[in-house]
Length: 270
Ligand SMILES: C[S@@+](CC[C@H](N)C(=O)[O-])C[C@H]1O[C@@H](n2cnc3c(N)ncnc32)[C@H](O)[C@@H]1O
Image 1 (cartoon, rainbow, N blue to C red):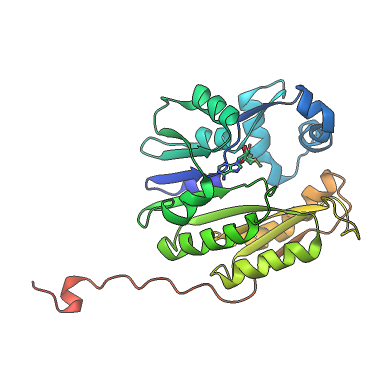
Image 2: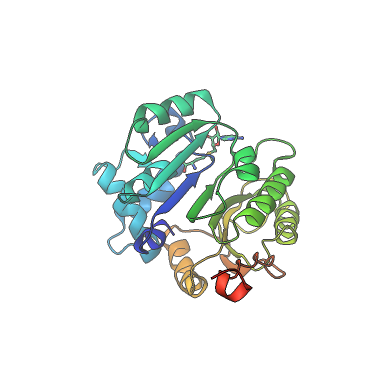
């Protein structure tokens, strides 16, 4: 999505509202504890003919560290795509991650690092009502009440800036809860948004991470067909055992605010 957005001419604002630390060490204790990287990016880096969907990420990983030990989080992926005149706002609430971000990106041209609550900024400030913007929303989903707060904040953001591209990551820990969250998003104005999911396992009877997905608002034309073709190839390369999905959220998008008529058409003075 970042590649497509930055391929179009015109200044772009990228806002990463839950930015994390920026770059991760895949040999560090937290990564070694889960071993997830080996099964994910590790497999893709070793593939002789990697899936097309993974190629931009693999390029970014190799550009950051040809050894594949340091792994780019969303701030690094976005920063690597910035063109002159583009702007990147990185928002992180946790002091340690914020300090890492500031050390890595503070003072870089076009990049602003903020210690703030991403949800509040989404509800009231970012994206602003004018200009082209891509908004990355990758919360931890650890707090009670986080989903309703996201629904509310995204509804407000969309009413303020209906033309921005919003990318919202979500986990599937309990299928019924995920579906309720997505239905609430659709009612809040995200009807018709693209919903893309990759599943490690089929849905389980007990709570546990089986899949993760992304809701894409204002997805570029044709992205749904491309993903429907490419996602199963990526799932096979990763050895995933659950189904992948490419669907639309039910309902219609909230109406976009009418653009003001040009003065000549609206009867204004000439
Ligand atoms: C899933 S991680 C983000 C990972 C990141 N997008 C990446 O690709 O590397 C979620 C991050 O959100 C931060 N966070 C949690 N609540 C937040 C809030 N209300 N506002 C901003 N950041 C928050 C956490 O400290 C954590 O670093």
